[in-house]
Image: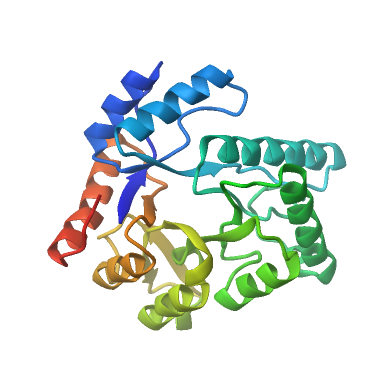
Length: 278
């Protein structure tokens, strides 16, 4: 398996970037270059990654294509196409976004997130983005979220069926789908369900921990790997079953040191379980 995460140090060229990647001991990374960079600059980063056996696992979008502001929604859809094109150009495993939200916050929880019309809009927008790029080397994916689709393995499978495009696949964030007490308490079985049902389509994985506090009515919090209750021995074996090149990312941390700690935690468990970490 390959382990990576964000980079919290600045760089100006591929040489500086590779030096920082090696500090983290990452073997997979998010895109180091923007879609608006010159072609030769993009190629220089790709060549540096290839030379150093680094896989570009994800190109993020993180914009709301379902914004209630029509102008903003249109711009975000165009941005999504540009990012998917970048992912295809540089050979990233996937290009990832969330479906977006029907309210002021791009990632917020709103009742309208779950209407039939919004579901149809998700399908139409995803098809438009994929069809405009027709990716050959990458996939458009939607990261699961606690309060919008896809929020379960079955909903993700339904999206795959309804979007019906070869260029659509799965970005797995099992922690984001642990969104109720039952899933938290039965987390081992739920995480296994995610990998079992979605495994053939998974292109990249986010690995985070979780805890539920004794608070009313219910508080479930994301944590750094190793700080909660997720069985990461189980997680690394499930990732390994997807293939030795599976990319696993830690995220949502604040500092260079935290990313070192989180990625080392998963790496050390994998090594202890006799799983090859590239």
